[in-house]
Length: 131
Image (cartoon, rainbow, N blue to C red; front, side, top):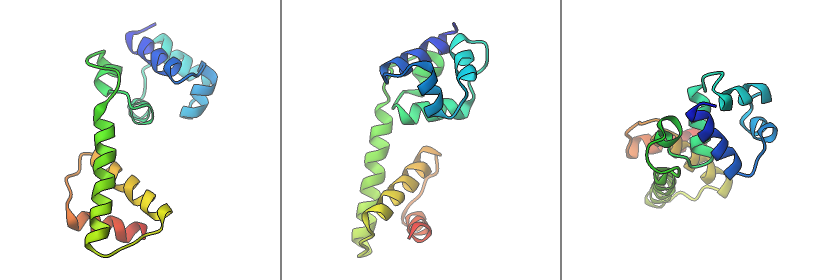
């Protein structure tokens, strides 16, 4: 088992899954996932990103074994996305329904984790897209 494979197993077990349900939840075959844990196949970057996001795992810990397992950054980014949407809606006298607000928050969060720097103009574009 590779080091990243061991860390994948830690994440999976911490989430309370055996390999088959975890693989299904991630949208990969059980045999592929088993090979990732064994170190027989490289773990796709997209899968690493999804695991880090879904289970709030630090990418540095998962890939390199450095730092803490949990990523404080994800929580901070979610907080920032919620605040950005709330402040923008308030400043522009908008009151989107809860379902739309949730989509807006997700869009803003995705923009932030993609590394894009944005301000009021970008928030307006996101609001227009989702609304």
